[in-house]
Length: 313
Length: 85
View 1 (cartoon, rainbow over the protein chains, first blue to last red):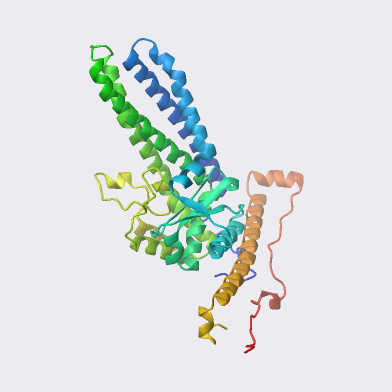
View 2 (view 1 turned 180 degrees about the vertical axis):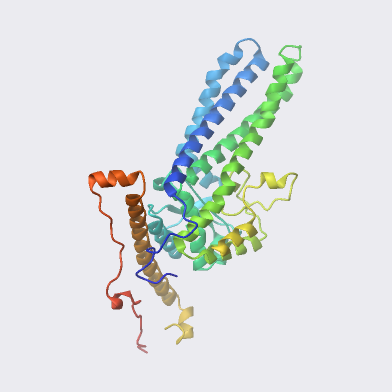
């Protein structure tokens, strides 16, 4: 810990990152993502309309596709945090119920210069945590019961500092929109597959361009994969960044390193987490089996590497 | 203090007290750190291009870090109990 009185007055540590550049970059990435999503859904709508009904039906369906895309983008912006918290079965806790957690969050919010987020607990013994919301004024931090029982105060501080760095950098907005749009994309491609399967029999009269049918199929397969890859691209580097600026906030990288070690040692899977919400968490909550091309599809950087970097600070 | 009375650590009231003491200490420390961090960013902006030109035109002055002058103020307050029983 610092000497009282000279805290923060020293030269900036090597890990100092410019928050303002980060925020600007995230804003631009968010818009890019939303634009890309709307374009893909519109394209899907057009091609499907053509395949199903032929002729100009694609043009007729286009506004509907655009409408669906915009509505889901707006929903994820304004209500995404509620959806994610609801899906994770998190409940809000008062300061009387969880004084230490409230204290730690409030202290670090002061240190990060952001308003105190709302605090949620997930009743699950697997230790993990995430932050969500559309900006620091509308943000929430959720931790599991396991995190509260298994970590000491310094480790909890490390984890919360990591989460609040996500809040301050507007990572939470980007990740939230990605999470909801990813869910939406999965839903859409699922719908298309089903409709193709059923539609292929009754109306199999040689109508519809086979090339366009293939395009629709390819799009239906590619959309969730693209969405997933985008999600991974935006999430891995971000974890290192949040580790670094979290350590900068507490001036105690060992706290987060120890917490990550405990989280890694815990073999339980977090039951309320799923593919769409997994990237929000501080460490991968799924503990899924290694798959083909696993390195490419990891949502989180290897935890050992994160601990190593923290200890090198 | 707690070292002298090991049984104290088990008492919930004592735990609450030490949690609150730590919370208060941390809040002061983090406020100071945030302030000094902002001063550092501001002073850096005053000396770097392109903001340095604007700062010169409008006469922005550099700020001072928050430092505790009195050595006695720097010390962590002592907490002590006189056993009543």
